[in-house]
Amino acid sequence: MKLSTAVKPISYLKAHASELIRDITNNKNTLVITHNGEAKVVVLDIKIYERMQETLALLKILTRSKQQAKRGNVKSMNDTFTSLEKRIRAFNDEKI
Image (tube, rainbow, N blue to C red; front, side):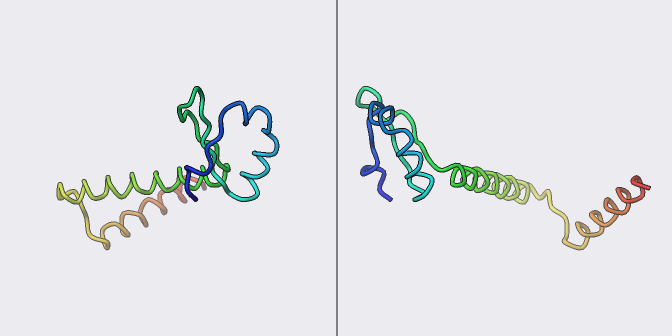
């Protein structure tokens, strides 16, 4: 979807709020709201927003992992699984 076709002034949002919310929710559209001729906010479906947040979180994790690898701060897959198994056993032992 081109955002240039989904630009509305704030007065339009005020007059058609429930219609816009229904359209955004049903069609997964994104809407840019302007105020005094300038784009100010973006309105989008909550599920799309949550997906974007999850994507950003994963990208941050990948970036940090890449930085750690560049520093040589890595361990083998075998060591990782051994460490995880120990942590799981210790957690399970605590619950008893």
